[in-house]
Image (tube, rainbow, N blue to C red; front, side):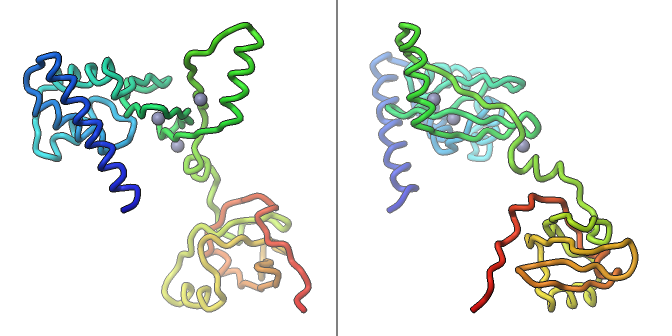
Length: 242
Ligand SMILES: [Zn+2]
Ligand SMILES: [Zn+2]
Ligand SMILES: [Zn+2]
């Protein structure tokens, strides 16, 4: 059941479809080619030839890169794969699903490629084309920028003791020995929590708001809590409890 099996069935159909076309064209080494097809269909990623070669090696197949490339080109020609050239990246291949379309978000820092589908954007593009008396046959929508993980990593991490009053921060890590960790855990402080720095004058205690109550932290403990700045609206809305 589920996605995995559906994919398995679909991939099997795709493979058999590809086999039939190869047989019609009287192509040699069909079984070897189908091993490449199998490996490719199973990833459902945007792979480079090199990455595909590695996946094949993992399965114990050591094909000539030229042969793999030839096979992928045939998959593109026959409509099983699409060749993608994202800016600043090597050529990649992805499975071409019949009757389905998606667009891409590309991270210019780590190279991550995310897919999205948005009916409104699709409709808008059709309308733009129409307005120009243009019949749209295909399009590419590529959004370049920083992915959420890269954005997160760009934010500085500092000890809570260095955060300024009025700042909203998110706990990234709790450092220190068992003692400090134990005391902070007893207070319920853990990574992922959002804190509002209420007062911190550079010495003495740091007062923070968390989950609608205030906690006083000694300087030593406040130095063990690693935080990074975050948006004010990540704080919970505090209501009177009945
Ligand atoms: Zn699109
Ligand atoms: Zn990234
Ligand atoms: Zn894609």
